[in-house]
Image (cartoon, rainbow, N blue to C red; front, side):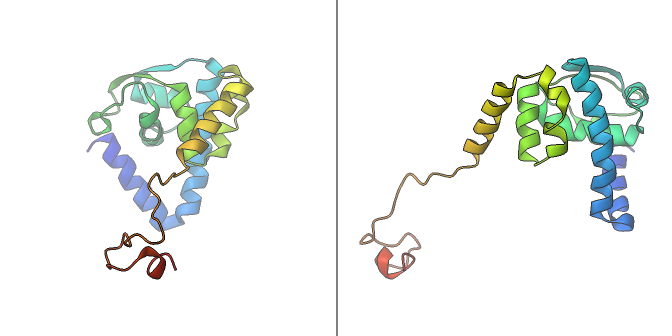
Length: 165
């Protein structure tokens, strides 16, 4: 069984037994410790055997797999999680800007609020990324339906007599 499958099975089992809040509490602590060390080193590269890296970051292989699952969208080149085993050699390069953006998107204030970010990005750069994230969540409807135009729902009525009421 692959490490990724073990990770997903463990999450399901953990949530069933202890609840989702308990899982996120424990996983959040693990994740925060790993990110604290990575950001403090100012290194955007993590490489080595999965089991050795898990020991370095003082977590189980399965929780380290969870970390890889979480950071995969923030890497310069995503890794195939299904192929990773305990003895797999990995060499990941982190895109810190994308990582910060994704932490904002996940509403992980315990991560994007870490003081170690100050060594990576200036306060202005973090504000710029935050602004870009906020702008990405704003939906702008480019085509506005006029009140006397046919309704977009297809009813055949004028917009003002249908969905525009």
